Image (tube, rainbow, N blue to C red):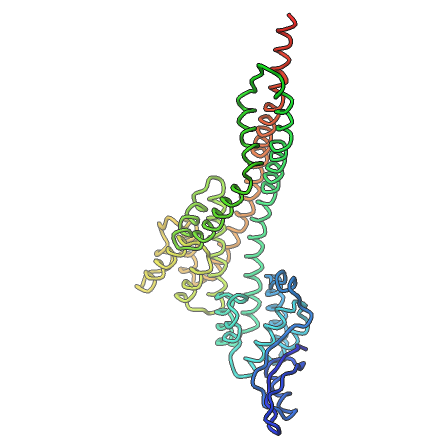
Length: 407
């Protein structure tokens, strides 16, 4: 049950009433208010148990959407009406934010809207791939199958993203620890070394020590300047990255970056083939599939290639021919599409292509991990060597001077 706050008019006294009521959906809440003899003006779902932290940190994850899709598909396949299936799924949903969204979807469906249109009201939760697959299932009468395909596609995509993030976690932690250790040494240890030599005449600190001491002194004195400059850089870089020019540049770097370029290429190929194969298998027209896939692939350059291919397909070319020799598509993709077109099994070949590239992504991640670990060790060693040299060279220099004086 969902708690709703409502505003209604009491026809007997013509007074405005504000109160709360529990119901399964907005439509059910409105009906219950009418039964009480009031005329509802506004009905809004609320969550009494939510707080500021809950609103900030509670989000609708891929796992929530996958579970929603699988449960709904199972109930529809079992013969339950759509509204009853949605009610059952809502009752089993533990995410309070998602429960409120499902309640609103139920209200829209009870009001006569198709499920795809009701879900489309929440684009931040259900993307275009999700909506189009549900719409195709409604048209073909295979909504349960489409929902299973949505769940499979989202699981595969989440798995790839999780692997890429996992591969980046180790080097990120190592670099962060290295920065913290170097920062501590430069800001706390080196100034103590400087104090030792201040009162000793005719002692010149080594060049590397003087450089690091300059950095240390500036940071300790003008840390607020560095913080302001860093904040401004982050702010403007973030805004620039959201512009078309920024996204174009960043997406180009992703594809051309040493070591990581091939990883991103294979990840995008897998995403294109997985989404495309799922949509074609669900009966979505090819041109519509290409339009949705161009947006879902999340790379400006590959999206532009898909849109160019779509225009060629409109002109009568096969998709495989339209993508052949495209610099932003790996050669295996059009070759596999051509086999699928010739055999009449385009969706199967796209799914096989996705499977292949997902395995390639996994292998590429292992290769990167193997290469990056020794590189990080060398980087750590170099940083440690510089710090140790900055601390010990003055001591050796002083020892040398004392030895010369003793002789």
